[in-house]
Image 1: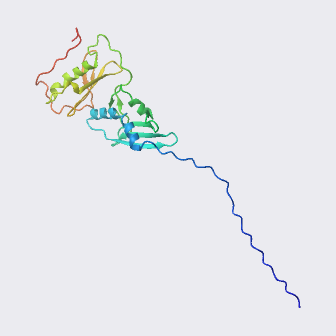
Image 2 (image 1 turned 90 degrees about the horizontal axis):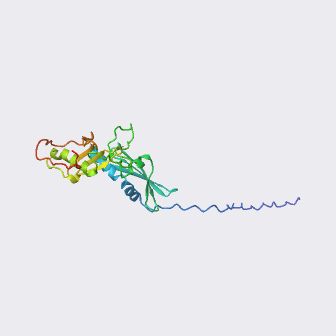
Image 3 (image 1 turned 135 degrees about the vertical axis):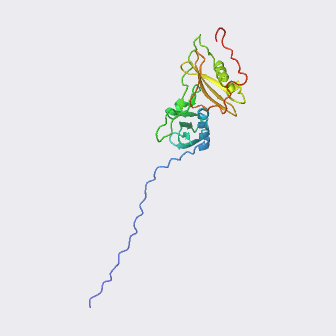
Length: 239
């Protein structure tokens, strides 16, 4: 009889587990030091006066909307400010997350961020997009001509005050008017009080003639010809 040779089953070899080389350590993402609200408040301070001036010019308060995005690579907040009704654009502002410093992020912000300008209602609106305010004053004050009838901001305020004094039942205070000089040497005067907006006025430095901005509110009750009208003291030898 032939001898049966036992069959030896092969021993299974466990598969080797691959070992991956160590990868790079992920770079931690820095957390902003300022909150979005902090950054928006800092940016809003730079357009506050401009928004107030537009509110006066159009006789409707400007309700603003602020949208902020944090740039992790630059470590700064980008804050875009517009009006809630989507008609006005106050520019994009950059807030340094380390120092809180605010700089202009586009040309609109650059045109607004100046103490020598007054913002007005846009002359025309961009179709389908918020429009920057109309800049009424820009650049350094011009030199006043020696023979100009209105040579100072105080005199321009007086001229406008006299013009509107009898137009309101409450007779406005002189302190409600603020005059600034434009690049042509003439004056722009803004008038407002806690109860009334007197609008924006242009004063010709040479002649003293006044012109109300077409966007300024009209007096609620005309009083021309009633009451006493104050007098204005002009430079010696003039008027």
